[in-house]
Amino acid sequence: MGDWRDALIVALERAGAETAQALVSEHALFIYSWSAIILFLGICVWAVRPLKRFLEEFSEADLIAKRRGPEAKKPESIRTDIARLQQIARNNIRRLMRLSVLLVMAGLIAPALVIALIVAFQNWFLPGAPALAIAGVPAAYDMLTGSDVFLFIIDQGMRGFLGDIFEVFGNTLVEAQNNADNLIFSTFVFLYRLIAQAISLCLLGVAIRVFWGRRRLRSTLARLEDRLSRAEAV
Image 1 (cartoon, one colour):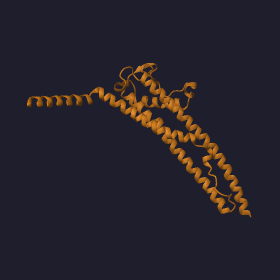
Image 2 (image 1 turned 90 degrees about the horizontal axis):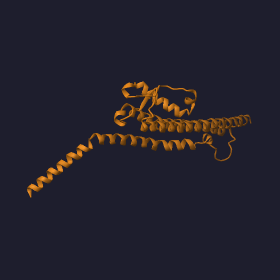
Image 3 (image 1 turned 180 degrees about the vertical axis):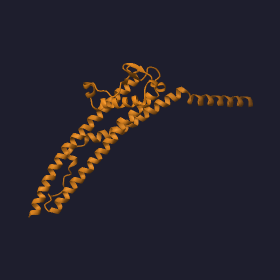
Image 4 (image 1 turned 135 degrees about the vertical axis):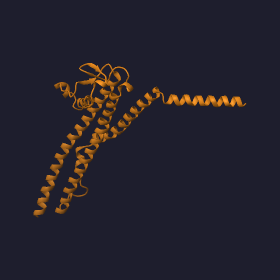
């Protein structure tokens, strides 16, 4: 009985050692690394969706709060309405600016950091073809500088954010481009540019609606100020 028990203990210890070794093996660490990247990008998507939806649902009418009850006629009430409209518009614009900054951080800056990380440790994350190419020639990371990687990320973000402007006018910030032979990294770059374009269109729509909302607000304030002048003249 004792021999059987000792053999079982030895087998369990050996199995535990093998399991621990497997959990810290290079293959396991590779899986952990990609899992962390996927989880991080998933959090970014989770953060971007409600921000983008709120900004898209914003209307220029939201800058103008309608007065409840009858129209103000006394000077004090009219001044209160003017101050209230101005404060509500300021609060809404500040909120839009904060949400826009958060959208850019979650949708552009955070994924850009992931792309930069993959480039910096491409031998670990994407063994095989180099992630970047210079003048069409694949370039390993030791052939690049930090500014090359930084400008590459900015260049890709601008190409997505500004649509085809860079392509049409042949503008570029850096010679380094994604290496088409590295399909996984090129897919990341393609999706990043799509996201940048979607965010650009969203922010452009917000800017247009704020522009028209401010015009309507100025028109409303002008009518209130005219009414205030007439009320004070009485």
